[in-house]
Length: 117
Length: 117
Image (tube, rainbow over all chains, first blue to last red; front, side, top):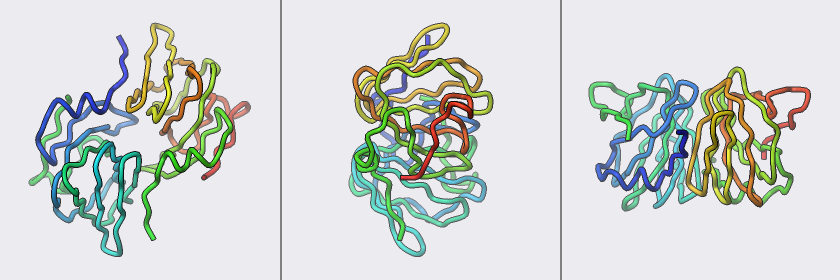
């Protein structure tokens, strides 16, 4: 039985921060939800653009040459290779899309394990 | 200057139905917004999965072996090759993601032209 993925319902199922959960897949990419709070590490991805869509809260993505501020219903794509640091103001709920298998920190040694939810 | 894409603001810029507008790109894919109303044609895409995310309204995606109902904040990915027909109940606003250059009807001869907005 095919069923839609409700982002808010998926986000209700966990509380960890910076721990993306896979909710669907698309052309070899993982579609994920995550809860963010505070500052993440500076990182980049050599092999994939990085798609952020804010479901709730306010997120800044710091770039080496500027910053992007996102609120609910807003998205931004960080081109591959571009260093960035997400900074969540309070708790922020997001949908993320990355190539399947991409480490969230840009480095497999420090990345969170990504499980389906 | 880098700037977030606000889906509601982009959707306010046009009124045509079944005419996706590109708002960003991601790993060779177009990220689009569209306004849907009524029944679309049955079609499939040989080369790409088809990502639907509902911003507002209620959408049914009819499949040959069932249907998926989507409301605001819900997404569904139709696997490539799977025949489907979107049916919008009233006006529905969506975000779509497809491989860049994909005809929205599955056939270049009948597809809407996709422009940036």
